Image 1 (cartoon, rainbow, N blue to C red):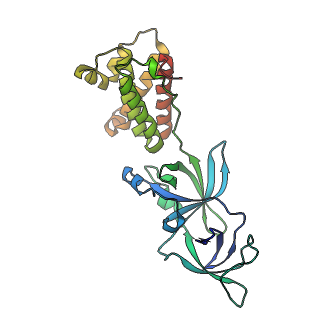
Image 2 (image 1 turned 120 degrees about the vertical axis):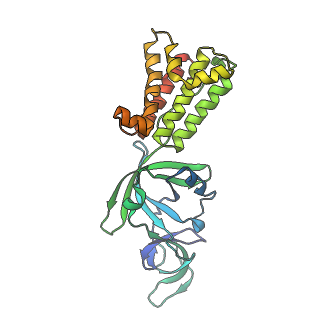
Image 3 (image 1 turned 90 degrees about the vertical axis):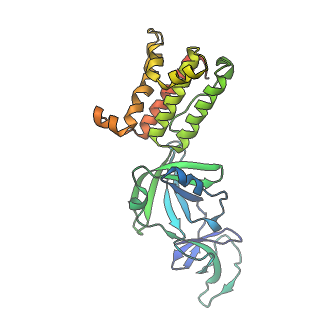
Length: 297
């Protein structure tokens, strides 16, 4: 188990409420598990551990590969704070609290138990996202593997989900003024979706954005006819000059990926499910089109 002093935020660990201080203290973050869109509403506004149902204890982080390893702990029905008996914390000269005959101090600590059966609970399809942090200050992670350690805790390896891919910054002055707002809104939806949504949803958002971008590039009117045409990405691609081969190919990537997200099309075409990697591919194709048009840096 792990525990925190609500007055000093010093960390302790041990067995059955008997423990010792941890120094240096690891990074501990509030954790939320997202398996459906509605779960995003469960991300707390505050990162205070007192109210957290689950936390992630970081054991290793590589900022280059964006790999994080650590363990999940949960409240598991315990009342907060919980009574502990602990040895003097190594970072304090003199501890406070009632000292027991065996030298331990009695303290009321915010306590968490190791989360068990992580593989069965979190390695799911569709993939469970791990959101660390609170409010608007969060990062999103995919679980890569779960390993049962020698102390019977589950050691979890995660990779940062980030934005799946990266879209360049728009050069708004280069976009036709009549379509500037629509193009900007469509790209923002892709960026937001890439952070939160599945590969299928990201491909759908890229397809919608590609339709808006191509209709603006072809200077179609912003009336009802243009909105209908935007829905038919194949028709828009057919209007592009034949010599713009790479441009057409990038747009066609998004067009061809889109039906793969539909189960009836998968059955008809014999294709696999759309993955997060496919979503990243669609984002890169969208970015290529924006750069080729000169609408992005």
